[in-house]
Image (cartoon, rainbow, N blue to C red; front, side, top):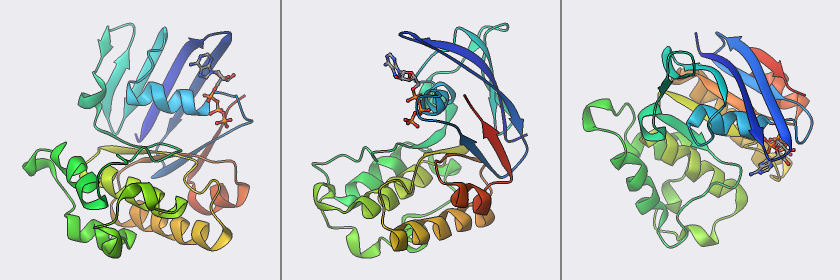
Length: 207
Ligand SMILES: Nc1ncnc2c1ncn2[C@@H]1O[C@H](COP(=O)(O)OP(=O)(O)OP(=O)(O)O)[C@@H](O)[C@H]1O
């Protein structure tokens, strides 16, 4: 099972509920703005605590309120690529990647810096400061940093939002390569029907 998510959480006035299970390599989470998609990713990553439910990713129970299981975020081993990338702006691309790599024990790593730079085509960016990168470059570096941390699963929050058509197309190709070559389960939030139809083995509707 790639993902099994059944949870309820409150955010201010909003009550968010999710209930799905997926064996697909890539599962898409879709729904109107405000439906709670990002909140579900945050709950899976351990950044928000549901008041009730169960979360299993890549075969490991991350949260189960009935069994009082609630793994710390760093123990969940999520590769979370946030909508805004959240790179360290004062560091070079190379230093951002090294940070990701240090999060994984050497024995756990399944991709090298050279491999990831080739896969995401960021070899020419390594000495750049991240503050000056374009939106598409930020996304590619953020995905590379996430992969280097040897995640057990990936959470991608609208990875192609605000990219032009050519850059979005290139990034979709990369996500396909990650899906097919690496095989870590991916949960993707997207507003694009075409993107979801192209990438997802299973689609989960919220809201
Ligand atoms: N920290 C917070 N405090 C209070 N309410 C919040 C908080 N974060 C999110 N919300 C509310 O929770 C609901 C779900 O937000 P969330 O960002 O998960 O939705 P989303 O489906 O990802 O939306 P979008 O597609 O616009 O990114 C929204 O109504 C939002 O206003």
